[in-house]
Length: 158
Image 1: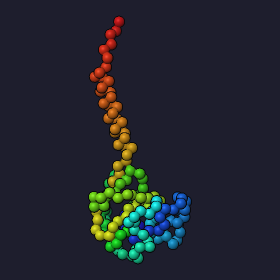
Image 2: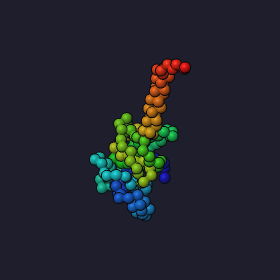
Image 3: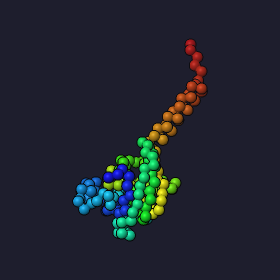
Image 4: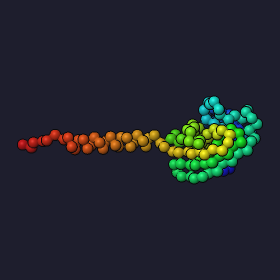
């Protein structure tokens, strides 16, 4: 299976547990080339297996692949899911033609986003919020240290 792929249909949104999701993925009726299991409740506009027949064609091309950013070009004849077989982890965001879209866990461990029909530019970017807080705390500590050095009280030694 390619790392990034167009998936025209959806199989089972919101499994009750990780174990039941893994059981669905192991089922011989599940076709990872045609189906993706999405985490969470359905959202308005999500491509659905019970929508139009789900057989319309589509292509995905990786434009660039870096550790913290993946750029893709997607051509979809109908709304579909873009499944990226890389690890899903909080901190990943996605943009379709510059507009933000929610990244969801697909097939338990990968990343998936809904794609509208047509030609689109997609960017997955990793920007962990923990790193941002680390920088804020480090900068605040540096400023506090500078203030303490400059404004320290004069001590008289007897």
